[in-house]
Amino acid sequence: MLSKIHPGRFAPHSASARVGAVLLLGLLTLPSFGCAAVSGIFEPKAPATLSPEGANVEFAQSTPSNKIATLLGTIDVESEAKETTEAESSARAELRNKAASMGATLVTIDNNIGQRAPFSDNVRVTLVGRAYRAAD
Image 1 (tube, rainbow, N blue to C red):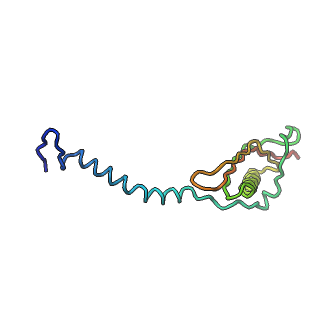
Image 2: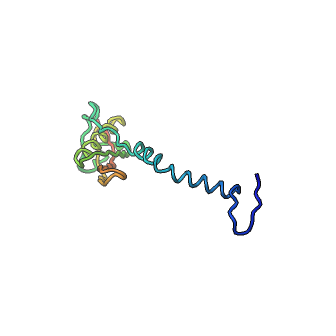
Image 3: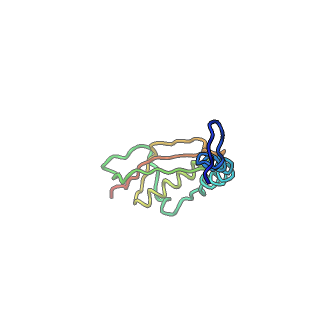
C-alpha cells in the first residue's frame, strides 16, 4: 500500500521504514545469537596426548646437518589450556605426533609463542618447527 508522503513526515509504509525496522530487529536479536555463536566457535580442543609413534620423535636443540638428517617439512601446531604448562605440553605432543606422521625422527622448535586466547581466560601456545628424518 502506498502512502502519500508529505515533506517532513514519516511514511510508515515506505521502503526505508521497512529497512529500518528490519535493521532494528536484527540489532535486538544479535546479542542472543552472538553469544551462542562465539561460545561454540572458541571452545578449545582437547589436549593432545603423545602417540606411540610420536614418542619415537626426539627434539633437536639445533638444526641438524644435512649429513645426519633430511628435512621433511615444517609443522605448526596450536594448543589452548587454562595453564601455560598444560598448553605447552599439549602443543609439544601434537608437534611430535605430526612429525611422526611425516616419517620424522627429529623435530626442532623454531618459534614458540604464548598468548592469551581471545574471548577466554585460556593461554594459547603456538609452536612452529621443522621435521627431520635421521640418515640411515
